[in-house]
Image 1 (tube, helix red, strand yellow):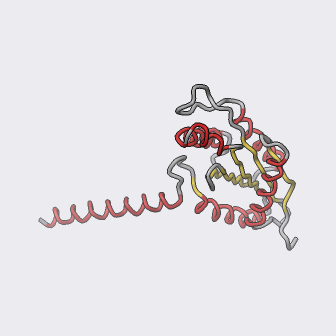
Image 2 (cartoon, helix red, strand yellow; image 1 turned 60 degrees about the vertical axis):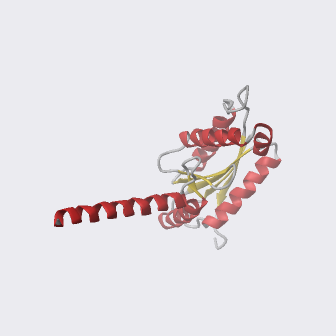
Image 3 (cartoon, one colour; image 1 turned 120 degrees about the vertical axis):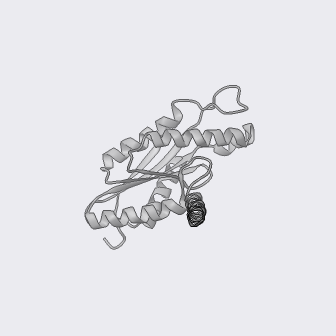
Length: 200
């Protein structure tokens, strides 16, 4: 009887542990793409910026936004838009290293954090992200022909001189770079040069 009771306790505790684990995962994961969400990505960015400052290293932050995405939803419906988002997430992730973070932080907006990367490598990666989206049309439900989709990328790289910009400063700079890429015609990556802290 004691053994049966202990097994019942263990089973109940295992279910509770799984429930907590699933709840924590749901809190930081985008259910559609399986990527991390903004709730996870922002603290990750802050930690990366802090580690870069402490180790005198550089890192890159990129914001990628699918161009004219609303038109896909309006013209073909949300199932088509969802399919494009899922495939876009897969393609973007395939271009990154294992240590990099890719998160979906808005409707059609993604954030990439690349620790310990040289500015030239960051620029090459940003271009690869654009090409991964634009070179092959997307299959989507309700669409007779594959959809041509493009993405704009705004990227910034911290400077490895002990004056690494904060996560908030990096995000603001990447957001401006993304705006400039959109304003310049979309379907391109715009990389801003090394970001220093305000105190530097």
